[in-house]
Structure formats: C-alpha cells, structure tokens
Amino acid sequence: MKPNPNVIVGLEKADDAGVYKLSEDTAIIQTVDFITPIVDDPYSFGMIAAANALSDVYAMGGRPLTTMNVVCFPEDKLEIDVLSRILAGALSKVEEAGAVVVGGHSIKDAEIKFGLSVTGAVHPQKVITNGGAKVGDRLILTKPLGTGILNTALRAEMLEASAIETLTTQMATLNKAASEVMVSVGANACTDVTGFGLIGHLCEMALASNVSVELETGQVPIMDGAEKLARMGLIPAGMYDNLDFREGMVEQKGELPTWKLDAFYDPQTSGGLIIAAPPEKAEEMLAKIKDSGVKLAAIIGTIVDGTPSKIILR
Ligand code: CO
Ligand code: CO
Ligand code: CO
Image 1 (tube, helix red, strand yellow):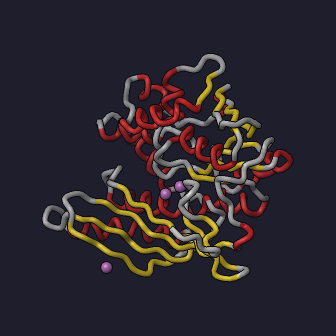
Image 2: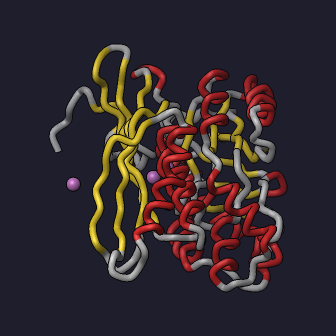
C-alpha cells in the first residue's frame, strides 16, 4: 500500500482502530467488530456486541460519533422481532456512548452475527495507541478476566442465574468512563482486551512499544467463579490458540496454577482496557477510574526494559 501522510494509525502495528487526520485539530477513528451470539437474550446480545465494537474507539482515547449496524440474520428461521430486540439493545449502548446510529447493512445468513462499524473523533496529537508504553509505566486493567470461561460454562448450561447476570452486565459495560479518565489524566498507551486474551494483547503492546512487561500475577482481577469452572475444564478453544500463539514470549517466574494461566490467555468479549500510565500518575488514575464506577480496576504490572519483548509472570 502507498503511504499516506494523513494515516496516523494504519494496519502495521495491530492497533485497535484506524486513525485518519482530517485537519490539524481533528482525526477520525474507524473500526468494525461483529460477533456471534453469546447470550440467549437478544436485547442483551445487542448491548454486548455494541459495547464490544465501541470499545476500540475508547481504547484509542477517542469519542464515538456515529455507528452503522452490521447484521447477518436467518430471516427464514427466526422471528424478525429477535432482530428488533438486538438492534434496540445496541441502540441503548450507542446512545449511552453519546453517538448516533446512521445506517447499516443486513444480509440473510444461516447464523446470527451482529456488530457495529464505529466512527469516532480524536485530536491528532492525542491519539493513544498500543505503541507508546514507556519503561516504568504501570499497567491498569479495568475489567476482570474470565468472560471466555464463563461463556463456555453458559453454553454448557452450567452457569447459575446470578452468574449469568454478572457476566452479561460486565460485557455490556462500556469502556467510556475508564477511557475518559485515561484521557484526562494522561496515558502513554492503551488497548482493549478481546479475543487474544490478556497475554495476547500485552504481547501486542510490548512489541509495538519495544518493551517488556512484568505482570504481577497475584494482582490480576479475575471474575468470581472462573477458577472453579476453569478447574472443571470449561475452557474455550480460543484459549489454546492464544497459548500456542504467544507462549514463546512468556517467561514464568515462580509457581502459577494452570487455571490462572488459562485465565490470562482466555479470549475476552467486550473486555476492559489495559492502560500504560506514567508511574507518577498511575495511582491517581486508578482512583479516578474506580470513582467513575469501574470498581474492579487494578494495577497489574509494570513496563520494563528488554527486547525482544517478553511477558514476565511474577
Ligand atoms: Co481492540
Ligand atoms: Co476490535
Ligand atoms: Co447496503
């Protein structure tokens, strides 16, 4: 592809979204994400798919402006009301984000798939990528891990109603509040945790930033119930793919139970942000993120020197 000076973030560094400069003070952020149903309730699925898609704009430090619905729907097998409820759930999250739905496209398909393309805005000098992490930065994770494990249990009908509720609420929660605090306090790098799991996305940040990561394994928040379910073997197939892909970059110091390592590789749906905060700002940022309602956020590690990039588990 020919280089274009207005492309601030393109394909090269596995970032969350593309960023294109329109003028000296405005850049647009563009991203698209769609998923297959993970919960039975169509309205909840719409909320989760929308939160998941909007998250990539928040991870870049941006503000969502407009969205378009991306729909694959088996209209001969399911009531159209199911689709209406998916769209209504998504709309509730788009409105919460302060954005507007301006269009979309649907096709007939054997299986439901739904998501959004999202356009956001950011100041060209204030784009937060996964490549800006500096030695000494503290890493903040804003949502606990384990959605892949709990979703596997849900599919196996082994999840209690209260756990389904907690899981749904977490996945439907926007990364808006955490992102706004991150932008106001000032961060060096950010990405959201999705399909590649915590370790996979830490690897991308480490590689893009040319640094290594020390993960404090005892500090990583993990969802209630995930330990028990992982110990029972309710592990999504994607966890093994993530492990195969990245274990060569991981250096384990000390003991770590297998279930916990599984959780670190567990693919997340609508996961939290990983924020690299300058050391003098990290505690303040964490406190403000918690005050904004993101109660389970935690400092989980530190950016350290060292190439080739490694993830060191302590
Ligand atoms: Co992302
Ligand atoms: Co994405
Ligand atoms: Co069309």
